[in-house]
Image (cartoon, rainbow, N blue to C red; front, side, top):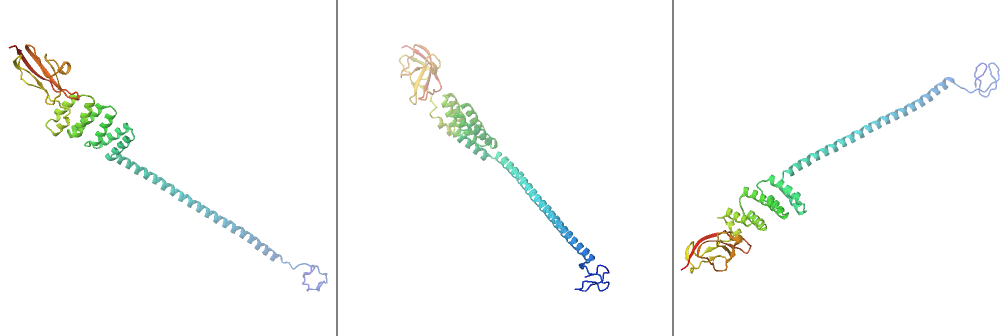
Length: 293
């Protein structure tokens, strides 16, 4: 202990100072310097800990910022990649579409598809597109012609077939289709004209049911007595109609029954044969002068 009066060291167990004789007061052996040092150490420790925490927090903040920047970069890259992919797909789609728009087979297949779906307007549109892409083609225009016939637009069908003929000439398919159309219209004159167009070719056989031979006379034009018989003949046994005044036998002719009765004088006989389909032959004429014996 230390004496409170003189500051001398009081031996342990003494109750008075051996130097000044003052009663000893129990005062702890306390060092202010050590206390200040201890306080400073504690303060530093606290500040160090706080600074450490702040540093750690700062480091964590920096780490979080780095992490956030990393995620932003990653998502930005993903978005750029997605955008680039979409653009690429659109470009590819556009190229494919342009390629298909120029493809005969694709346009023809669309025509067939819509034809099967009974959407005939769309079918004609795509068949026309195919035909434009391949003007030498005959399949697409024939499909168009068949659709027109089905829709009762025979004149449009004939126009399409004639365009085919302009490029490829007459063939069996074009002739058959035209014959069917003209037959449905009972336009036998057109069939005869078509027959003349292909005369001399193997296609003439297609017109067998529509070619009606002219009738023939048993005697040529001339002067005959009333007792000389004059007959009109059909090589196929078809009905014969005739007039004796030169008028049109298809309009006002009378049915020939095996005997031609002519009056005395001169008569212009006009005659035609008529097939079971109602088709008339070309008119034949002969001039006869009848005299009594």
